[in-house]
Length: 568
Ligand SMILES: Nc1ncnc2c1ncn2[C@@H]1O[C@H](COP(=O)(O)OP(=O)(O)O)[C@@H](O)[C@H]1O
Ligand SMILES: O=C(CO)[C@H](O)[C@H](O)COP(=O)(O)O
Image (tube, rainbow, N blue to C red; front, top):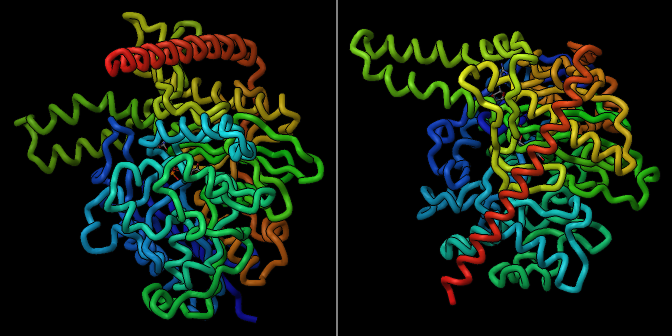
């Protein structure tokens, strides 16, 4: 019998990667990565305003390049399935055929017609309104399965923001789609009205829940924003788990990718959830998908959780990770991004002064800059690991992109304290790494306080693979062992597992995990000598966090009062 293969396609924040794997064993045959060209230049973004938009052409170019490259390794007819996962909530406006508005004449350069990346926080006021109205409007609190606090990172807040800001987009947008749904529809070429939308995306980010018949009611949505009127019925009622068949490759895309129209395309999902599947998640494991951000994914049997609601997380959704189990999501908005921010700060003199240097040729300057930048993070890890903790009291808060969980507050900002004349870059880097670990401890504690025990912790993603220092610190801070998954491309492998089930190779996701799992590469065990010290510093982190949060709220109150006085 000829071997069969599946392709997992993982759209991360900065790049897309595809892996071709043996559908029976999970053995990786090929992988390809494509960084988004426009995104790399940060076109359509404004970090100061927290605006991060991605052009669909970046995604289309990446799809063709990566899938073509991996597919050429085996005969096309042996590739039986593929699946896409993306970041989320990353919604974008589409026309009645599901064409992204930014691909249409007149909208090509309009950021509001593009995908609003998960880390775009321009919708802070809309999220605050959703929270206020959900609690006071007199009807159902539609945020209850989303941790009770709706975030500016999510679907409805972003749509409300864009339609308020941009009338042309509001009028031209027939509907809106999560990125994973849009790509799946693009590949299958189906009808937008009957297209199978992702349960994972809808449940965690769009307040979709079976108990109230799907999306929040029309009444609630129009109360939030009259311009949302009528959109609900142009969206969807049903949702589907990622092991289901969304369709087969369309004629056009089979040709563009070098595949056949027999290739099954599974329903889309989010990167973290697919990653957790590849990380061999099982009941009460926490899989930490550590990339630019971190998503903490937990699954639990539905009947054991019953009606329990975990407050302050990013939702609990039937089947968002493994069909038949409850998927719970939490996370931190900046992890790799926090470290990358610091690298950017200390690279500033290099980036500013090197181009002015007359000693080197332009080519030499470019090469030097690239070399220094490439090595910077690894060197900072090494230097930070050898900082004597007794000599450094530097303490940081990891909120440079707001706090995702516990208790979303994306308006919060990062902070650093206890700087002295002796503070060095590695000491600050170490404090940032520690802050990420303390933030993670708060999340683990929230789950356990709410009756969801965390029986093991598994790490995966770029940071888990590249920073042994981070993972050891995390094990020490959490005082728990941490296993790191073998796969370098775990979300893509997870999507490949979903694809293998959709294509009928495995009967369900758990069987696919067992057959296709790549196992674990590293095991970090807590250092008993560090545990007590980190516990003490964790308490300082919590106190620092409370102080900054109170100060932020007080300041926001003062600004609101001044505005009222000015208006009067
Ligand atoms: N040596 C390192 N130590 C810690 N973080 C790193 C290191 N090298 C890269 N990173 C971080 O890893 C992140 C990318 O991880 P990856 O999983 O590839 O990303 P994505 O979230 O896009 O899937 C970046 O934010 C980068 O800052
Ligand atoms: O919240 C998410 C999933 O629910 C995002 O997809 C995620 O935080 C972005 O991930 P990455 O760190 O891989 O860029």
